[in-house]
Image (cartoon, rainbow, N blue to C red; front, side, top):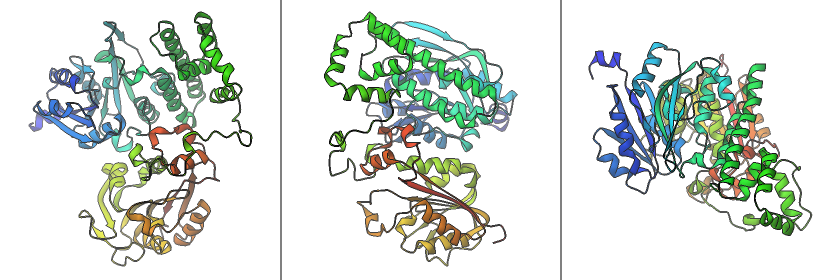
Length: 542
């Protein structure tokens, strides 16, 4: 591309996450190639597919193929971002397609207003089984954050074009399995200007395999994402929009669920009944009056009071029940061995990584300049992004060819003093016998005003692999406060703990992050500290 074309038409990266939807890719590719916009790259991120996704992609010249083991759409999109070269980014699901003029329309909006973080447009909903097409056109001209609090007016991620710099600050939250796009829209609109127009730019294919077809999951995820904004509300208008949003989400999805139950398009499972009863009791009883509910009634009668109390507890209508002595139902936890001996990596990822990565995400502004990380630089690159001018790795031995320094951080006179703007030290201190020496080294090698970010384990399994021989310590927030006061005299130190009995139990049993309730992980009980985090800033005069 010549220089003038680069100026007039900045490169757009279209990122397609794909999990076993290779059959749809040719249509998605065709919709991109029909665009009049001349500067486009296409990236397919294969999220561990077992179908012909790779073969289909490699037959299409000019399409970049990237593979990762199955980690979900959020992780796939984040990986696509790291491989993308475009100044503007679009995410297209493999089974959807762009309408003619989509890229040119959205790019024009961004080029005409350099302050916009993203622009979104209208779309068509294509109901495959019914053979119907429905226009989704919503006019939103102001107060985009408040409008999003009242519901996801965007509705389809392919209608959105982002500026690249957005992802230097924010990314898709891999802990979310649904509504991760809505979460990102809210977080961006909270801080930056965005725009929306009424030109149709994409088509959303709706069929039974869509994640959005699972109404109880979608409703729970939408409310969870909305609740994350509660502490970020600044004005009475925003608080009212948040409250209204709760009512809108519940009304919309319970009505959908009710209609599907009536027309037998939803399986009448316990989860479905619980969702309807919890969020719209009158619709639940209306449905019960219309349908023969004898089977449900007999189940309740046979299992009362235990079933009824558990049901009411799940609905939030009954305070958490404490079983009587001898009546505890251990279920799958009635075993002396964990489900995983690999911290849950083989079940979707460790529970404690939720706390660790949330901490680094919150403190990512401090990961900048010349940064040092122990073992590898994955978190430096993930959360530092373009803010990093030099990424260094300290490894305990020479087995890592990417290491820029080799040695034990507790005894490392070869590391230069007053050098690093940031040090990322996650889940490492417990493996160092002289952990006080390690903290002293960190203080010495940080620049004045530099930041040390630490995470350490509290309640944790001990590694079954290579680290079991050097797994020396576990910590508490009180211990870290004392240690940091000694190691960072006159510096600014912030220590926090995360976890509760639920988090500790699921982590000890080796459950994977996708298996657990994020809402429960977010509840804090300082008596069950799973992860302790530290942010320490070296005194400027040190």
